[in-house]
Amino acid sequence: METVKKPFFRSVKMTGTLILFALLSVLNSYADDTATLQAKLTAGNVTLTAGATYNVTGLTVTHALDMNGATINMTASSGAAIRLSAAGASVINGTVKGTWDYTAAGNVNGVIGMRILADNCIITNVHVTQFASYGILVGAFNKPAVTKCTIDKTGYIGFYFDAETIVTSGGIFDNNIVDRSMLPPSTVQQLAVGIRGSTNNPAITTSGWDISNNTIKMPVNPTSWAAECIEVRYCNNGTMHKNTLVGGSIGISIVRSSGTLAAANKFSNSQLESLEFADCTGCRSKGNIITSSSGVGILIDGANGSNGIECMNDVISGCAQECIHSYTSSQNIKITGCTLTTTTKAVNLQGTNIVTISNTTFKGTSGATLAIMLDSCPGNLTLSGGSIANFTKCAIAISNTKAGLVTNNVQMSGVVLTSTPSGVASYTQNGASIGNNIVVQ
Image (cartoon, rainbow, N blue to C red; front, side):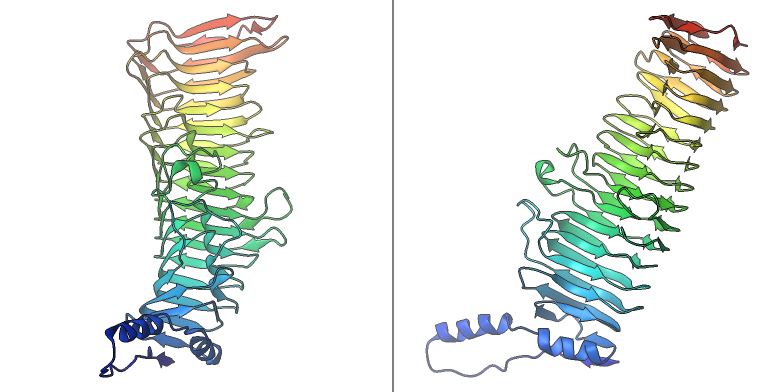
């Protein structure tokens, strides 16, 4: 491994004006280091001078670059500061810095901090900051690993993996900080972290991602609904574990994915919902803690609805709307061992079919009305075990206004009911009806 020492300029005694000396010093501080560094990087592994500063117009890494605490300033107005373009290339231990002013609008076509353009590339312990477009951008390559990095002050997206053309696998995004919270909410048009097999092609997926122990910060109440903390799309059998999500339109949005687990994450100050499953199959939420949302805690939805979503041991409170809202055409939903504290409704089942709720604690506060709402549902709700306390109207409300729809097969058993007037209340309109298998024990 070759160590690159930063050139320095020897002080020279001058009898002329000090202005000339100051000018030369400024010029020297902006000397371009691209050619020197690139020659070393092309030849093999490189370790930079500890703590030095380098000015470049873009570098390509095909081996291993240990920045050794150095800073690389990107001076060009286009392209990427560092490109990892060979399988197994790595960059560690330093700062990659652009010139973008984070109070200005971002630019999707602006300068990029780092790009991964090959399989099995690694970026570790790098601070990527002040880039108008992406902090780190990854193409259709397998098993990228980004760990222990700080990505902040990015104008478009912090970290973005988007394959679009081929099926990919693997991927690690762990122990990072992605912070866009300092940006004005009106200028943030996209997410902090995005991982997509594809945008709209179900045949192109990515799988097996580990997204854990990250802290993601976004502005509170951004103008754009696309300003999420994390979105994964066509991303199967992945794990999102022990992340902290603050602000943004949505904390974690899981879209058109199967077998993905969101576990032990902490959410606060979400705008629309903290956790979303949209058009998903067989995904799970487990042990997540949601403490504040201007909308919903967990939203189960999608153009076609989600199927087979499980919520286990989640603790949800501080939501302006429902703790859990399952939307039209979703089905086979399980809610187990959760603690749901609400000032309105705890669970809203809207056009949802086949729901099992067991051993869940429902807590009403500040005049909360009901624990569970069935809104124009076929029914098929089983509620067992757990407790329901302090709701002003009832435990279960059935509202059916869909012509010809019969809500039936609603059963509640073994639930401890406290300070809640009645078990079930119902309302129908437009020729809708309630079946005769409504059982409350």
